[in-house]
Amino acid sequence: MLQRITQDTINKAAWAACDTFRGTVDASVYKDYVLTMLFLKYISDVWKDHYEAYKAKHGDHPELIEAMMAQEQFVLPKGASFYDLHRDRQKAGNGERIDKALHAIEEANGSKLRDVFQDISFNANKLGNEEQKNDILRHLLEDFVKPELDMSPSRVGDLDIIGGAYEFLISKFAASAGKKAGEFYTPAEVSMLMARLVEPQEGDDICDPTCGSGSLLLKCAREVKRNADGKAHYALFGQEAIGSTWALAKMNMFLHGEANHQIEWGDTIGNPKLRTSDDLLRHFDVVVANPPFSLDKWGGEKAGADKFGRFRRGVPPKTKGDYAFILHMVETLKPKTGRMAVVAPNGVLFRGSSEGVIRQKLVEENLLDAVIGLPEKLFFGTGIPAAILVFRKTKADRNVLFIDASRDYIEGTNQNRLGEQHIDRIFTACEDRETIDKYAYLATVDEIKANDFNLNIPRYVDTHEEEEEIDLMAVRTERELLKAEMAELEARMEGYLKELGYGS
Image 1 (cartoon, rainbow, N blue to C red):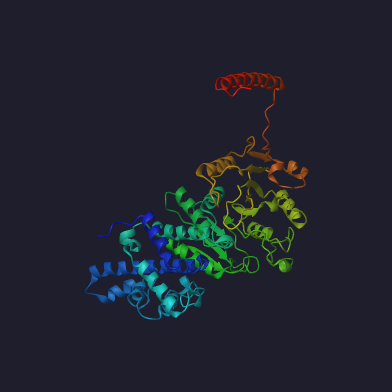
Image 2 (cartoon, helix red, strand yellow):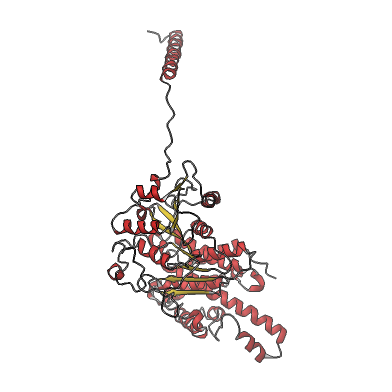
């Protein structure tokens, strides 16, 4: 009998499956194949596990078994299982067979998986010529059939382990994907911090308008469950512009057991899809995002005529879309309960022109709650320093808390990261909302106004360390003592040299 799987076991086995592609296909390409195969293997294992359990119980009633299997979360058409594909792996045409199986699964599962596999083709030429492609896919199928990747519910038990393996792979791919990594993954520690800052609660509607692979939404969901002893009702919403990344987010939700989600595919600024029945922007209790930094060509030429009124405080520069995303997020907050956290490059704190006007209005409307300066090299694909901006529709006061957390991090070779103690320190400072010497400052609106609504953190948090005063007399005395000691040593050395016959 197989032992229950551990997180470490499945992580290692899934990462080892990537060896099939290394040296042949770039990680930014093969990540979609590995993650899709993990999803296919999971739903195939669930189907097989449940079928065998029903057969053991109702073996004499095949019609009943068939009816029960039709009620599964995912329907697996005949011939579309991972095991069907593995059985035929030695034959030519692996790519075509896998594509047909995925399309059949899409068709059989209606709205749940519609279009999820349309951006990936296992039959694509980027996997090499027909012979090479067939070999690569045969090896991939053989990797995933190993006992360590048996994801049957009767063996795994905790669904979080499957979701954890998916997240593990995404984070590993992000570490090797360079600039592309920021398109699909926010570092786990930053996501945890943001989730804690917005304090998601039971019953909340939670949204990420630039959701990538969905990791930030999942951290918020985990935070709700942590505060509610694991049982909580909430809903997750997201939108993602890149089709293949949107597909990752959909699979990620299902692998974490998050059935109550709505993840849309499209450009959030140009075509926001999370709308009400009367075509207005949907409002949320919690909005979190790590939008693309200073996005060029974000749609500024059409922003002045935005039918949702998102840019009534000003139109951001055409070549820097940071405030386009911030204004969209603010506009989707519920009137009383709405709170949000967004990552942005430090430039949004002090750049002038239209950004300065927008900044001023957000402060004057008492929406900005906190500005948190983060360490450099936290984010994949960029080393530039960034900040988390926290907004609330209902605030305790009219002040803004500034935190300089830029010096608190665990140093890495290519990437720095936040430790648990650093996250705790930031969260506690936000909760206490008090000035802390060289770390935090609670600024009034008048102080911010006196700074022309410039939010650059060093204007508020003084991290300058006073240099110790030098006692010149003490230094002079110490110098004289050292000179005397040196003279004595020179005399002794001269004596030794004379004794050895080297004297002058």
